[in-house]
Amino acid sequence: MPRRLISTDLDGTIVFNGTISLRDREAMARWRAAGNLLVINTGRSVSALEHVVVPMGLEFDNAILYTGAAIVDEDIRVRYSTALPAGVVEDILDFVEGAPGVTVFTTGLDEDLLVYDTIGSGSELLTLFRPATRRELDGREVIGVPMRFTDPEMAARTETYLHRRWEGQAVGFRNQDFIDVVPASASKGSGLRQLVASLAGPPAGEASGEGTFGTGVAGGAGEATTGVASEATAGGSVGLGVGSGPLEPVETWSIGDSWNDISMHAAADHSYALPWSPPEVVAQCDGTVSSLADLIDSLMGRPTL
Image 1: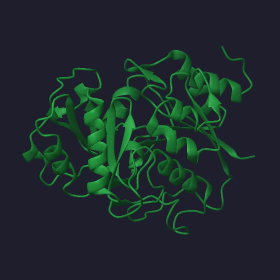
Image 2: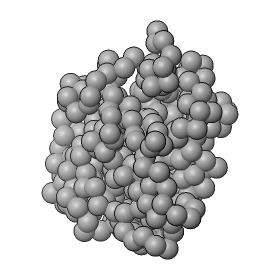
Image 3: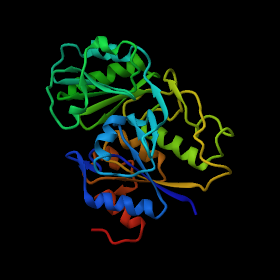
Image 4: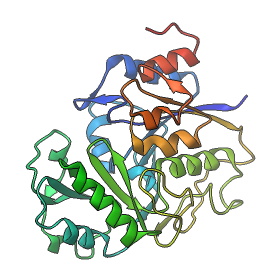
């Protein structure tokens, strides 16, 4: 029997107003107690993940962060990460300079910064970012650049510019009113494929390429397109250390609500959107479910609400 794994998005899928419902949390606990794997797959950073899961004591097996640019274990220890090429953040800031209705953040393994803001947003999520100047970016490794837009036309122009200027090196993923810029090799789908390969493949030291975790700086791998990025693996390779001998195959389910979940859905064996997902997302999935709890209950033979 294959091991069963659910890959779930956070914001707009199970996180609403900064919290996760008791029903979803109880369902996730039942899923793991039965020996199944729970993977969080999100655009959030390490610190933003900790902000939502630690207070609730949420347990998981792995988390794919920064829209696939990093993978952490159950203790939120980084097992793989890849950074944006030098110059991406500065170029983005030059492009949006003077534009109203734009907020630019940077995310890294150590700290998340707010570096440009003409929105003045004060949501719970945005309070996780420390205000900083461009000078503070010097020498700092940046994994992601989340950008928030109030003007869809400005968002579209920024997407077009990113694709033309940084094709093959950086990619932007739409997520509600955000565009998350990450290395071109990263996507939620590539992160899921890489994690599954490490779970189902030979032990560390006997595999190379996809299925091993490493660190590196993105550059030149894959085609940078907004929405669905290349599924290539970036960076060097360091074995994950998943034990000895071949492991059981892994059967995967995905659940996510937005455009940046499309590659995750494509990578999963079974994929589910939410009733409020955009039509483009629903079209890529096997169906829709009302909640993660409903999906888990159906897989475990329990009645759904």
